[in-house]
Image (cartoon, rainbow, N blue to C red; front, side):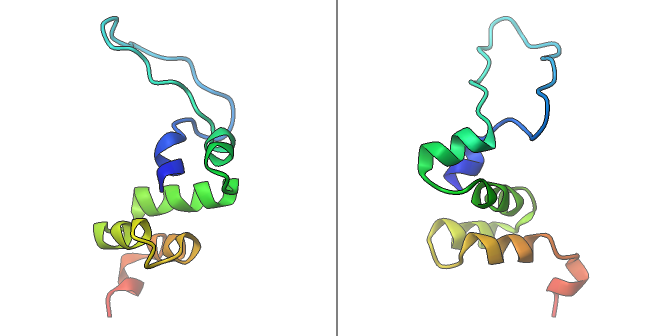
Length: 87
C-alpha cells in the first residue's frame, strides 16, 4: 500500500503539467517500477495496491495495511461490481 501511495505516475508517457501553482512545489514523479524497487515488491503488487486504494472500501484498505488480507485478493474484491459484493 505504501508503494501505491508513492507511485504517482500512471503507466505510459507522462503528461505535461498543466496550471501548476507557482507557490506549490511539484511532488517528485515516481513510477510504479521505481516505487516497487524502493520497497522490494513487484510492479504487479503496486498495481494491485493501487486498485485497493482507488476502489476498495476503507475496511478492505485497512485490512491490507494491517496484513490481515493479501494485496492481490483484495484487489480482486475491490474491482468487483458492487452487486456481487453485497450478500
